[in-house]
Length: 517
Ligand SMILES: Cc1ncc(COP(=O)(O)OP(=O)(O)O)c(N)n1
Ligand SMILES: Cc1ncsc1CCOP(=O)(O)O
Ligand SMILES: [Mg+2]
Image 1 (cartoon, rainbow, N blue to C red):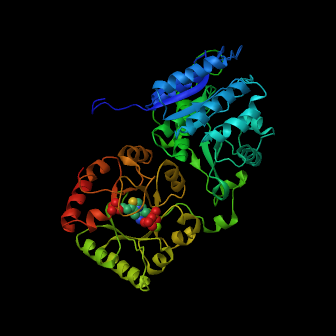
Image 2: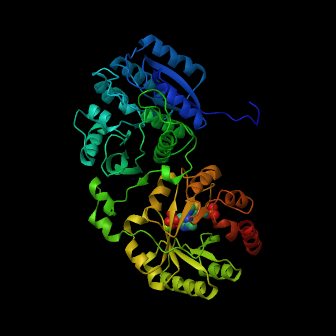
């Protein structure tokens, strides 16, 4: 392969063919192509179907299924696997054996299983005994399974008709496995006018769940949404997106397809969801439900203690472009950079001494003198007491900090985010700015597993074009113009200034990049 050829990642779909072209293998390959990966197909059944129903399933034999898997493994190794319709328990066991062998050989390939059991038309697509085989053989080998509420009820052998019963059934299906579970909510309406997907992740003490709420798209063209969602997640996992990010981006991809294909007419029945490219509009993305908000009540996740500290809609800064934003660890640096005309600064003290309050007071006084937007990292109580311009908090601080007190004191609030899921989560607080990082590898802080890169940054920034956004992590004078072109109005740096041979020169260069039109 020459240096300019780029290897396209391969994603397999092990699923049924939909002769109507709306779901199954056909939807999967369209999705994978749309998201920039190469899709390979392993057909489990040649379903005869159109937009009105499914006259026949036509499962392939075990030999036919195995031969496709073996052929692909010889030459087209996957970066992720999506599994859809498995027509009977024997197919479940065959695919499970195949995955087990792959894993035993040391392959770490993400597997997403969409347990297709019942078509939107109501047609049963798999044999009854399949469910039990899924739970014992296949589920433990998957990273994520994505049932809709009907499929969840089928797997859990229970009735699912409310937030509470969805959560209970999801927990019973997951059992003690690490497999994450995303229950798609198209069939249930927990909050009027919306769809709610339940995402269960983590394991043991770290198990948690999130509700993803999206505006319901009024369309009958929803055929193939489950297949499209799961293959989009597989494609995104192959591309290196973390699971929660892959789930919210795939959710948006499907809702974009529903919105843009809503007026299509294909067949006499419900037509297929569209495959309409990367989701770049915030309106297609779900909102992440916050436990402290009133809205969480019908979902059973409302917590009185969370609500006591909860606030949203923080004071906006005087400009949505905060410009060059050095993050420094001493009052001396605050003063030197204020003297250079830097207008946004953060005091980030990770090893506090006994005179922490005094340091913050001095920094605040300098900030006032030079008209600097001075943010204090972590120490929100001292920031309030000393009258700082604002506070910068990490995701984990959002549970413990008293957001009501920060808001009541009129302080601005900046929140760190690392990817799409956290961006959507933090946006629910409507902070004064959202920071996105780490853009590049950095020696200042361990950010392994949280690197975004400029393409992802640009995709995130496109969702909030007018919102104050700050990029941070590994940014230096050479990289600053690429980062600024991603659509952020501010760049936060530590070492690009504190370790520069001439910090004045670094400030001037970085400011020039941010101020150029
Ligand atoms: C502008 C900006 N963005 C991100 C961070 C990181 O904050 P946090 O997640 O709280 O981590 P620590 O800085 O506390 O290690 C930041 N400080 N500033
Ligand atoms: C505090 C922080 N948060 C995310 S990356 C980072 C460090 C940025 O430092 P540098 O600009 O030296 O890479
Ligand atoms: Mg912090």
